[in-house]
Image: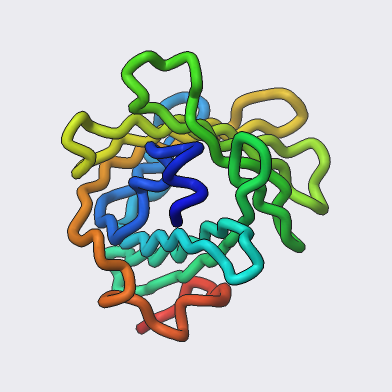
Amino acid sequence: MQIITEKQPIVADQAGVWEGEYVHLDADHNIIDRHKSRLVCRLTDGPDGVAKLSQTNIYTWADGTQEIRYFDGIFQGDRVWIRNELIDGFVGALNYDETNRTIMVGWTRTHEPDFRYYEMITVTEDGEAKNRTWHWYRKGRLFQRTVINENRISRDWQAYDDPSYYSYRPRAAL
């Protein structure tokens, strides 16, 4: 974690466990989905000297269904690069934010070239809460937004980690 801490301290500070709520809106601001979330964000320096970020998003709906999404990336240059069979993108601090409280995320879907996703994460000054907005584009047009409010419940992600968190699990009953 030392490598990312030195170069991207606000990104490194996201390590831990976060809980919150996602509210998905269509382009006309109508709510199309809403669910609770728990994120387990891990930052490690590998034995090969490569800094790595991995994250598991656990989504839980009011009807008791749950979905798990996992992704990981490596730190190169000035950001974390995420490249896998589904997405190609980046995570990095917004360098011209003088408060050093803003992170930007952007990616495309590997098999959907007309899709773009952009996220802005604003972290509170005490680092214990964050607010996120996602903008979803298809063929250059906004079709969805997601608004997320999260609070950190622990900095100790290892205490919450589970082997089942390292692969995708589609939405299903618990």
